[in-house]
Length: 169
Image (cartoon, rainbow, N blue to C red):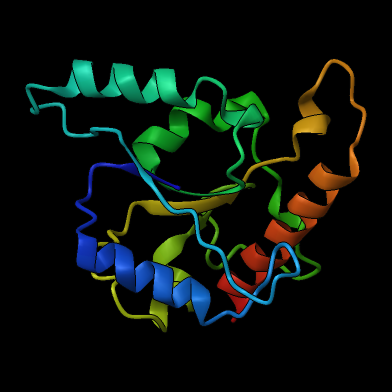
């Protein structure tokens, strides 16, 4: 899921989808790569006359961030900063055994344009320097009743591996 105000055209969407399909990562054992990619518009330009309306809708959509079925988020830094302190994103040192500081925005986010995925796939021209990538924590980690169900654990682990692949290649 992308949260920001860059334009994702139909052609760009197809390029992104094709790039994920080339990873050959299969989330459900059907031997196909299923891609769910969508944009939530979050306006970071204070001069934009629609900033209040657009960001109000984005904040409403993202209010249930942890419960949503998306794990990997591409976000403009302005949108990320709204949620950075909520504990909703996995820390990089819990994902990687190596130091990621050379491409890290902070403890949880990496600059997307520094990832192997962004550097080596078509359709990434829309990515600005302020687009970061994060992995959302598993829903059971922030729940008041942290019971793990097998499906959530499996989905989180799949997306964790995809996140690593996107960064390291």
